[in-house]
Length: 371
Image (cartoon, rainbow, N blue to C red; front, side, top):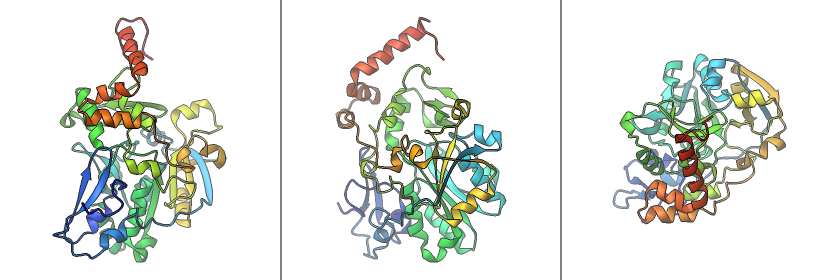
């Protein structure tokens, strides 16, 4: 098997898929690993895939020149966001100033990237997506718009931003604005599919999926929690504890204080602002360029100073990649042996999950109340 980058270290950014002139690249999702596999019979050895590969040729990382925290002034924008609404407010302002935004949303059971030219087309971009997204096609679309002389804002995780910078090339780079999101890591969508199936959901029935509601991390389908709040939901437990990411995430090149985007956005978990504001969500913004500063300036934001070193403590991905969980190997071992999602999760930490089962029984019998 000939792969574009080192075997089992592919992030699935899919830039190589878009750039290949012979459709010679196929992505293999092995749940624990991603690989971009080259069909050697179709390959013409043009080397385009290796050129855009952000694993082989990462874009430049830059020190932040400024950092802020705060939230969108528009309370509707803030309330519809996972954090303080900075991303949504910046995207809205960029479109209002004549630009095009490229970002990810759920569509027909897949997390895909789309272009938005007005606020209505932006709907679905807001909110965290704790799963691998499908970026196939967006690199070509963004480059076409840049060639036409339009300004495009691309918002994605750092490996996707790096791949986009590689794909569009230096000549078009002045028109490309980028936001990289502070990324813990990302699981294969196959794991999410398994979880939803066991919770009794199928994708045709799902109009909206949320992975968190401000500071509460819990899967919500069509605006309803899949489990009571007081019971730990298994998919988010695996995600928050670094159990279910693909292999590349544990050695991520971009998990550092130097950043690849014009702006970096995340949560200001270490904020000294009051608890009420924390509950409503506070965004963290790192600015790496003049373009990044212009994005902040054009948006309607409440902006406050932040202690970056303090902000880095809970945002460990500004210091190093997530540490691989001691439960990781056992979880994937159980999945590969044919265990169901719930069975595999319980095998990783039996005592913890028995406690959650007892909570469910106690809630059902009204011994304890949900909150």
